[in-house]
Length: 78
Image (cartoon, rainbow, N blue to C red; front, side, top):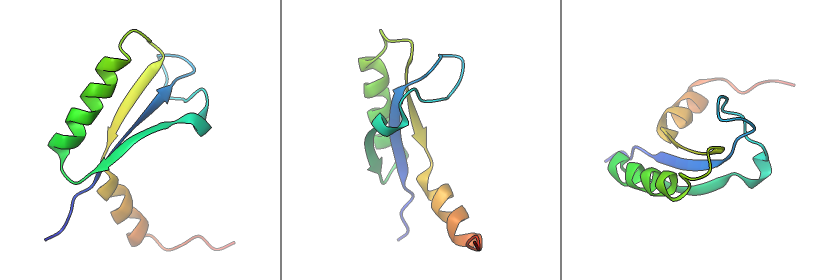
């Protein structure tokens, strides 16, 4: 049985109109989840918890797509 992984992460943005983190070293990794429903619940919880701060933004990403893309592409040669 294959897993389909999802990641939930977020942090403070430079401006609410762009997805650029103010301090990338302090990105909050909520977790990695094996199903989308659980990941969505975690994302929603964090988004609601920080709703009063317009600069805070949380994202739900399809980690499996990133893994698949990385394993299908040849490594860069220096």
